[in-house]
Length: 130
Figure 1: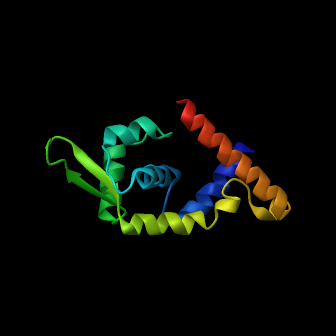
Figure 2: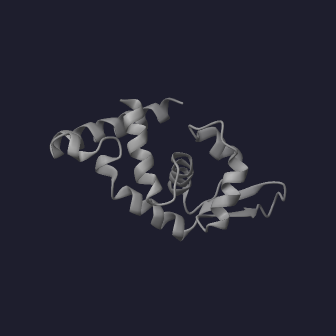
C-alpha cells in the first residue's frame, strides 16, 4: 500500500511540475515564511536525506519557486525563502489535500477523508518527535 500511496502522490505533484522532495522543501519554506532559512536547516528537516539539496534549490530558484540570496551578515551562508509563485504552486497542490494519501475513488468520500486526515495527523506527530 505504501508504494500505491507514493505513486498516487507523485501523480498529483507531477501535475504541478513538482517531486515529493521539491514539495517538502516548499512546505518547509511556507511554514517559516516570510522569514528565510539556510540549506542546512532545510536539510535537517527534510525526509529525503539523499538528494543534492543545493542543486535542487538552485533549480527551484531558476524556476521562480524560491529566492536564494547571500545572508547580509555572513556572505558564506545563503538565505532561502519561498516566492509568491512557490506559494501559488503549493496552494494548487493543496486543493488535492483530501486525497493526497488515498484517491477518493477507492473509498467513500467520508472514509477517504478520515484516512487522509488520520495520516496527516500522524505525520505531524512524527515530525514533532524528531
